[in-house]
Image (cartoon, rainbow, N blue to C red):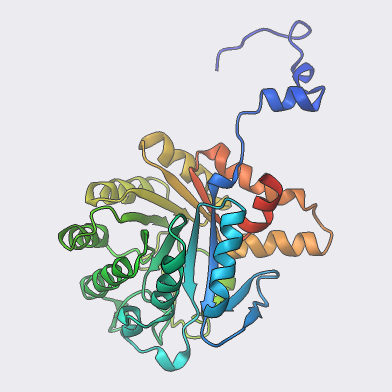
Amino acid sequence: MKKVGSYPNIRMRRNRKADWSRRLIRESDLSTNDLIWPIFIRDGKNIEESIKAMPGVYRYSLDKIEKLVERAINNKIPMIALFPSTPLSKKNKNGSEAVNKNNLVCKALRLIKKNYKDIGIMCDVALDPYTTHGHDGVLKDNYVDNDATIKILVKQSLLLAKMGCDVIAPSDMMDGRIGEIRKALDSNGFKLVQILSYAVKYASNFYGPFRDAVGSKKLLKGNKKNYQMDFSNSKEALREVALDINEGADFVMVKPGMPYLDIIKLIKDSFKIPVFAYQVSGEYSLIKNGINNKIISEEAIHESLISFKRAGASAIVTYFAEQIANKLR
């Protein structure tokens, strides 16, 4: 960077002297338009079940879902994301509940789309909430079978689109699934249904609380390192994103978020495509527990979300969405 001016002619602190001045020169800002609110759903009635590993986050029965949508709309949050906590009795080795038109997500979609047309609904496409082994796909000889899994993911995506899902979000990390899903959507009358590809999903240690929330943590056999990315790699992320763009992704996701701000910036600088960030459950719980134990200030929430915008994220999936939206609107 070329040096421009020097002290004492240049005093950087002059522009920081007052709140109005700092606001005028602010380079990154956060608004409710940047937020996606993930919501966990479960069976039953009149249930708001706390998730121990995620203070302040709940699993909601479907009769609560419309009130949650209204809260999102009132807070000007443009999109919610649905994640099911599927009963063990409905799980099996192939995750067939994913393609049941009466599963939790499909029921929620029908309820929401009946009365609310102006909010986006994002639906996860993967098999881990539905399998007895906790993996994102079909296991064969203790290895996730890529092509067999894609066949089910395509059926899952089509079903979700038929139920009214706006944004199909494959988080499974199977090779080639974006192209197959895009082809199926287009040929079945869903050309305007968007695909948010979890193109860059690392085999991270920050997912634990989420796996508790959807009931897959205790079931998981082994790890997911043979399909999720090695957290040591960055150039590999560029290859993953390039492939998914070519296959028809409308946006791409980087997951987790804060430990991978460099990846968000790398992708944003390399591809002119909307890049979303997922502030995952482990990130949320670390910040929330720090606040609850008075180790850090509540202002750390806003600071953490601004870091995504500074890195180039177009939108952020965060469990803080409703809390921060209340302050922003």
